[in-house]
Length: 141
Image 1 (cartoon, one colour):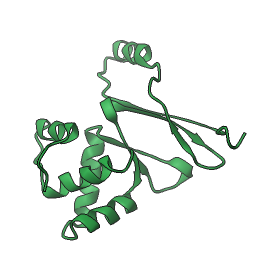
Image 2 (cartoon, one colour):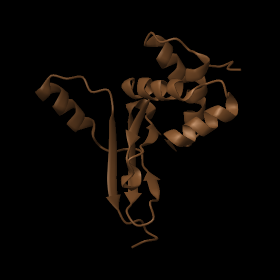
Image 3 (cartoon, helix red, strand yellow):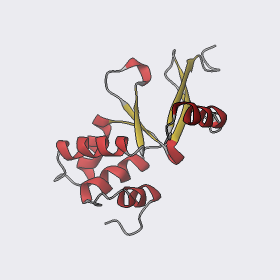
Image 4 (cartoon, rainbow, N blue to C red):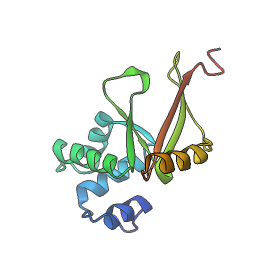
């Protein structure tokens, strides 16, 4: 089913984790989601691909991917159900419209200097970040 491994699958393997069918299927769903997907949507899409993959396997995989900074949960629209976002290169940035819930992604967040300062001052090695701004989009202003 999976012939060529994505960079995230390679990262999973390099971190010492097995590339199980369940993990690769969840990863495929996440990668095809355009970066924003709820756990309910992941469950539904995984079931469409392989109905033998159980809920527990999906949630364990989401937890594993979160711990490896492959994804991060975010609470767009103040929901108690997280929306998972892909973390390309260990970071993700977006603006959420508080009126229509539109999500606008952007690339350069300008946090390189702050990251270096935090690492030096707090003696840590940062592996990623999720930056969210909230406000009104151009259609809602």
